[in-house]
Amino acid sequence: MRAVVVIVVLLASFSSASSSHQKKSPAPSTDFQTALARMDTYIREAMAKTKVPGLAVAVVYQDKVVFLKGYGVRKVGDPAPVDADTVFELASLSKPISSTILASLVGTGDIGWDDKIVDFDPGFALADRAATQRVTIRDMFAHRSGLPTGAGDVLEDLGYSRPEILSRLRFVPLAGQSRTTYHYSNFGMTEGAIAAAKKVGKPWEDIADERLYSKIGMRSTSSRFSDYENNPNKASLHVLENGIYRDRFVREADAEAPAGGVSSSVRDLAQWMRLQLGNGSVGGLHVVSSAALAETHKPQICRSVPGPVAGGECPESQFYGLGWNLNTNAQGKIQISHSGAFLLGAGTSVYLIPDEQVGIVALGNAAPIGLPEAVCLTFLDLLHYGVAQRDYLSLLAPNFAEFDAETQDSSPNYANMKPPQNPSPAKPLTAYTGKYFNSYYGTLEVSAERNQLVLRLPPRGAYYELAHWDGDTFTYYFASENTGIGQRGVKFSGDGAQVVIQNLAIIANSGVFTRVD
Image (tube, rainbow, N blue to C red; front, side, top):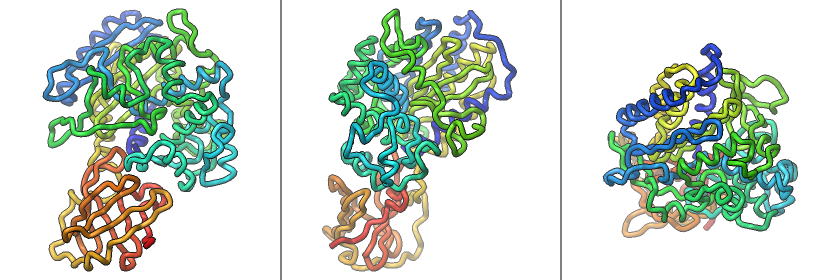
């Protein structure tokens, strides 16, 4: 989800910057129906323009659900429509939901935001001993643990289990000291939630249901992929190929469930927004401590410049709270938001303005192009000004285009390159065969089978045929959330002493494997 990290930060910055040029206006007009009707028209026009298969939207105002609607279809080629109960994979919109669950545990005294991870999970370790002893649940949920962006993500792509991924984080060099720099970390946040679950003595998924979903009637919401997969009313994932959306991929995010593995409907999320805007209560039912929930809405780290919140200026007030992006809108009110994106086919967004008691959530079943965010921002403009102040979809689209699934990682996509006219010959295939080890990824194997070089990646020995490119460079096709889709490079060196898997070289030379046999 490395590229999605950039998208989420960019969107939070954009939402703040997009409003900074506007004059302050009064609180929302009471003519909500006009704003909602105009939003409905905008959504229909935007979907016709983008061809996104399906979208669902909910709006909450003054503790009432004032808009709840689905658009389009759940899956291309199938007429079944999206409705308010269609379940979508939320991707990183899972983060503020999980911080809500933790706030419940904090409110009942089961955990504290500043409890140390190692006190609940003694086996956990970061690359630095002092950082290991210091890091807290708050640090993990504010992305200020020192773990670099993307730590653990590719391990998930390869098929490592959650415990294995969290254990291997100790091999990742830290990108900064805890509480001084912001680095968006899915598995850092996951560890924060799992440590809390270990303290409680129950699986995280059960805690999520007991503390939040079942309490406020989120009947279609789950932190387990199997529940989403088995729901007949679910939205499939779609990617754009040659101008046509196709449902090609499955994204199972159980390993990072607290950070990206929640699935839900807009009907359920409307209840959750009511809880957020109601200071922990819904319809008179007190669910989460108001003080613990309010802590999630407070700035914890500046997203745009190094240094803790107390350490100086933060341009455009671009903060991160506990599972939330925070900024001040054009009306001078605190705006909290979060986007979610699976480059294999999902885009989601939520915006809340607590002082105005208004919230909107939009869920899409296509690789992110900015549509859910544009819907949310356009609605807020319609609410405050009567008309959209900017064409958000057009402004956001180029930024998302930089991170499509085919180009998102920094390694070359050989499918987009012309092969050399006179490639240098490869060595005999046996020169490359053997086992190669990397402390972060584990052991891969290269073998020669039927005059074909074959790569088997850890942990499951997944099979990939290598095609010769030039000299000691080969290519293989790989498709995943974090390393993109396409032909990636495999480069041998030192007479086969090392091999570099280019699309795995995301974390500090982590793509280098050394022969061990």
